[in-house]
Image (cartoon, rainbow, N blue to C red; front, side, top):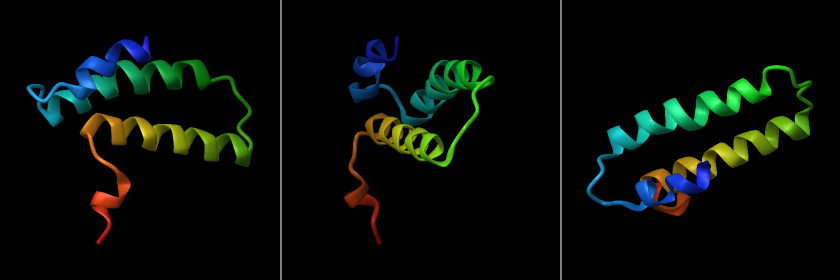
Length: 69
């Protein structure tokens, strides 16, 4: 399902606000629903945060280096 959103994330005609709403509705809720019965270790938490940041970077179409001060 997440791979199907790649076209939307890359589309320059879709606003970032719309992409964020789609992310919150489709990605975040589905991900959290599946994770509600997990026992989360430190390693799991690190991987989840890394994955989430990757999705958000793809969503806005930039790299982390562009946002560094």
